[in-house]
Length: 176
Image (cartoon, rainbow, N blue to C red; front, side, top):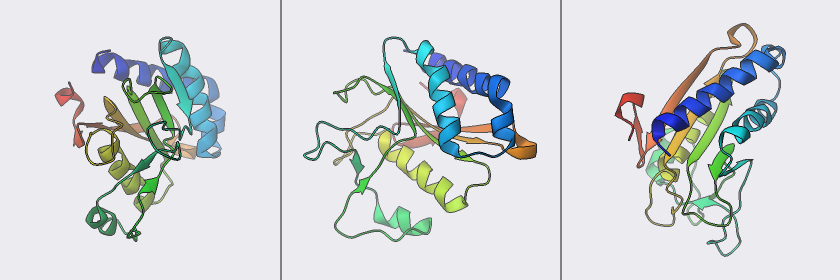
């Protein structure tokens, strides 16, 4: 699937959340609520894929859980104290993929409200870098990673997308 189609589908689903459920966004309810709504609107757009939120399975790992080896220096830069001997378990907010394999990882989304802390937003960006590249134990290699920051209360209906491919943040016009 072309990256332009993935982005178009994502924007269509985001707009459906804002059109149909804006009252929930204006109230600033939990981000998990937004994610479940977005997942609901994404599913019909990806009939040949699985669309899951809070999915942490990985059959290639011994314990069947997603985890990343993240550069400790980068974690310190954003204010997170790295653990010396651990890789980082993670549960992406929303993924479009085929279950039981890492060969068809299409889209990984990390979603934050505009009121979330800068540190949490930065950690999401770091995770997206690692989820879109294949090296070390990070074998997920999603075709596209997206950080979605959406407005709440008086900013409801506004959002920003940041794109990742091949382990790097990139502008939408540079996507492949």
